[in-house]
Amino acid sequence: MNSVIEKFEGVMMPLAGKISGNRYLLAMRDAFSMLLPFIIVTPGQVIGKAGDKIGAFGLDYFGNKAVLTAIIVATIASWIFVKLSKNEKIRIKMPETVPPAVANSFAVLVPVFVTLSVFTVFATILSVGSFMGKTALNDLIYALIQAPLMGFSQGLGFSILYQFIVWLFWWFGIHGHNVTAAIQNMVYMPAQLANQAGDASYVFSNGFFEELTLLQVMGLVLAIFIFSKKASWRAVAKVGFPAMLFNIQEPIAFGLPIVLNPILLIPYILSPIANMIIGWLAISTGIVPIFKYVVPWTMPSFFGGLIGTGSISGGLLQLVCIAADVCIYAPFVIAANKIKDEGEDEEDAA
Image (cartoon, rainbow, N blue to C red; front, side, top):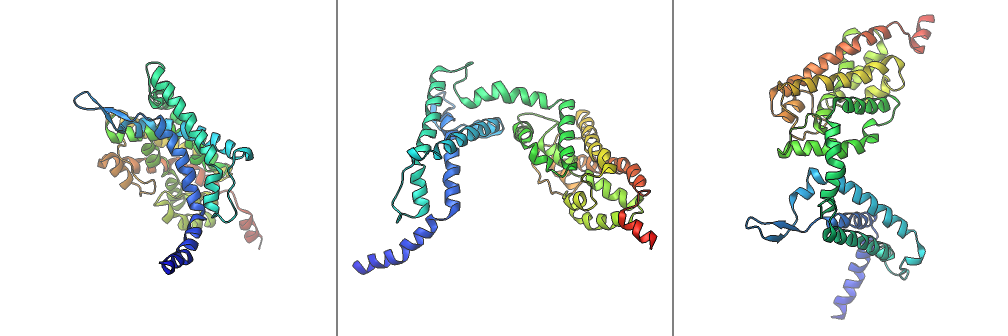
């Protein structure tokens, strides 16, 4: 028996120590610390068919109506947790022989407890007292913030402004979609999920923008192939064309470049806005269905629209947008033919 125990201690304990020291386990611990507050504020009862209360979570609290609540709760919980974790007075210190991951988990035990307690008290007060007739935080946030934002975001003016900001950031070399991710996650992703669930028919959704605006750079590539006489531009277009088949614009954006290129500023911002307006008109008039299904943004043109709308008209809409983009880029590509690069000047002088 002693030999078995010694074997266990000699083999398994070092292995457990290595596993417990893995930083990914710490990341999982922190992720659960942010997830649990959302579970706490989510009602744990649903109304059954017979009208009785059943201990379960309603799927509505984990769908498109809960996106904003999840963002807010996770943000607040993270802020509380990080602030308390930096306070050395409430950290539990373990002996040096304890594996690092275990020691770190005990060190933040009090911050985790306090964070969860804050949300538990808040959820209890709201469920007992209610506010605006709402006893769940998700219902309250949806009524006060998300529902009005969803309606406002479906306006053409707001959508144009959103696209203008996205592509202006891209022109400066900043990932515009990452910068504006808060807008996407708060209004356009819930709109996409609502379309997919059949709860609504939003024109402007995450799928709408991904399938109709990302392809605009393909219009530039085709315009270069047709109209450009610049050898450097044609070389970059040839290299970037395979990537653009999957809506990956970086080889063109930074290789041509589009970034900080004054010649391409206007069409680079105008093309996605034009695509958006074309898509809005096509869907509003019933020519093309709404983008109902979630499609990876790397899906090639025509197939993305076909799958996203469930109709061949969606694929044809993408082709129309690309044709419009070629027309928009063409005058600027032709104008660029008259501008010589520094390397071209040296070749001419030689």
